[in-house]
Structure formats: C-alpha cells, structure tokens
Image (cartoon, rainbow, N blue to C red; front, side, top):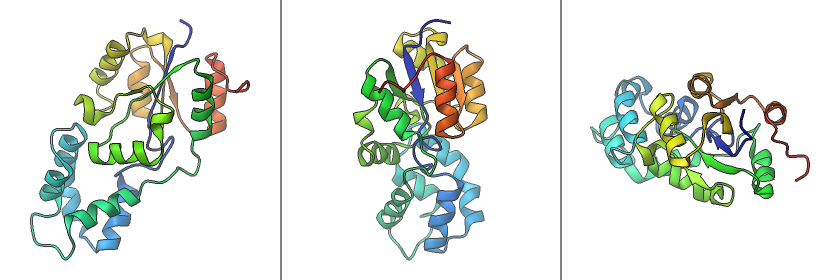
Length: 207
C-alpha cells in the first residue's frame, strides 16, 4: 500500500444529516401535509437527474410536487428542505477538523447531493475551511455507487487507489470504492473511524 495522500469523505451520514433522504422528506411532508406515496412515485427519476446536476431544484419540485396547485410556495418548501440539514449526532466533524489542521493529507468531498442543497451545506457548515476539493455528484454528473464516479475522482486527483481513503456511511458505496482498490471505510461512529484511520497510518493524536 502506498502512503496515504488523500482522504475523501461522504457528507450526509458522516458529518451532517442527509440532505434529502427518507427522514428529511418525511419531516417536510408532515410539515406541509403532503401525500408521501404520490411524491415518492415521482421522486426516483427526478432525484437522479437533480443530484447529477441535470435539472434545478425548481424543475425537480415541478416534477414531484408542483404539478398541481399547492397551499404553499416553492420557495417555502425549499427553505424547509434546507432546514433539515443539521450536524449529525455522531458526527465525524471533530476528526475532520483535526486532520485539516495537520495539512498533511489532501481532503475532499465525494458525495451524492443536488446543487442547491450541496452549496447551502458547504456554506452553512463552513466546509470550505476543511476541504481542498469538491467532487459532488451535482458537479460531475455521476452518482455513487457508479464505479465511474470513483474512477473520475482518481483521475482528477491523479492518485493511485491505494493512496486514497474513502469514508461513507453506506456499505454499498464503500464496497464500490474498495472494488477499485481504494481504502474504504464504512463509517459507524467517530471512535471507529479513528481506529480505521490509524490502521491505515492516519492518526489525529498529534493535532
């Protein structure tokens, strides 16, 4: 294994709550008294295009929700979506901050997120302070666990797989990275993450 040069992070489920997953949608559906089943039938295809940056949030919501009149505005709904973004209870942010302080490793985001929520979360939670590169699905037109997304990340970074660590809370995403030879960590909690990083020669103890 090469010496670790780069650590790529998922965001939702590792650092923050998910941007627009089942729990977040349920909370907003309850707030606006929306028929979940009707929305979810329209969600998958529209969400795929939205997270790949092919459509805007307005187009996504026109396809999934505002295809008929509503008692609330699109802007009100988007604000409620954004409000679901919070620091995760078992967040790895302290680990990330320690690694960023060291400046020993290149740190990047490799996440599935739509542009409007992604940009909001980067700004709200000061992620620009910690990350050097942002390989989000909405910027590169690919979504995990598509192997092409990991290959593109390696090409952009000009790194060999075994010099890279990838951290994700979803097993399928970690497994797809591992299949390419990337050092994948299936995130559970901060203590487990620190143990896994130490095993790979990355320690936060000195920082």
